[in-house]
Structure formats: C-alpha cells, structure tokens
Image (cartoon, rainbow, N blue to C red):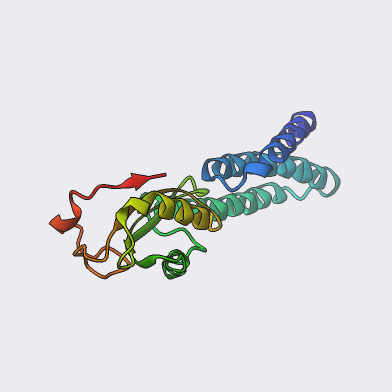
Length: 195
C-alpha cells in the first residue's frame, strides 16, 4: 500500500511541476485539479497509514479523505465559475471596458468607441470587437493604420485578437460603449476588418 501510494505521489508531483507553467489555461487548471486530487489521496494514504500504525487511530483515514474532498471541491467550484463566465462571454476579470475604450480614444485621430465587447476562451485568450469612430476630416483610407495602432495598444491589455469596425463621424450609430440593441438592423450588415 505504501509503495503504491509513494509511486503515485512522485508521479503526480512530476506532472504538477511539468504543467505549472501553463496554469493560466483553464483546461490545464482542470487537469492540475485532477492531479492534485490524486496527489492528496496518495499523501493521505501515507499519512493515515503511519498514524494508524503508531496510534491505532482508525478515524484518521476518513477524516483525511473528507478534508481532501473539501479542498478539491473548493478548487473545482472556482473552475466552474470561470467556465460559466467563459460560456456567458463575460468580460474577463481584471479588464475594464471603460479603460480599454479610453486607451483607444487616446490615439490621435479617433473620436470615439462604441459597441465594445471583450470575452475570453480557456481563460487566457482574450478577444475584442468594437466600432471605432474617426475624427472629422480623417479619411477612411487610413483605417488600416488606425487598426494597427489599436491592436498594438490592446496587446498591452493581453488582447491579441480583435475585430474592429472603422466608421467616419457621419455614420449613424448609437453612442453606447456596450451594444444595447442586438436586433438593431443598422449593425447587421457592417463590414469588419480583423486582426
């Protein structure tokens, strides 16, 4: 029993150290949780066995099992919450829409930002879509230059993929940072430029 638990302990420690560098990925987090559960079980078997051998306290085995199960359940709940936010395409934690919009508007030649949406996949890949309004007199032909500048600014916030619609100041649109009418036909046939 001790030999099997010891081998399991060593193998799981190796796996944890190998995966720890990728722990920002939600799939890796779930894998680490599973491995840590196995690690806890192996350690629990060893500790319980030693205690029972020297003290005959039989209750230590179920007690350690319950403690390990509670720790795994707590960690699993955090992963479930993160998964729910991803499925609901919620704004990632640590990212403020207003701050992102202000960073974009600081670029010379940009008047405003609206219909901004940021979401994530697997917890470490952030995506963005938005409409960007150019200042009066700025030609739409310069859109690629602005998109390049915007994407450079977005990378500082961990956003590496964006879909940006450029508009001149004469384009009719709702002046909302977040799109408030998903059925607005004015937004159904826009041309988007992606990075």
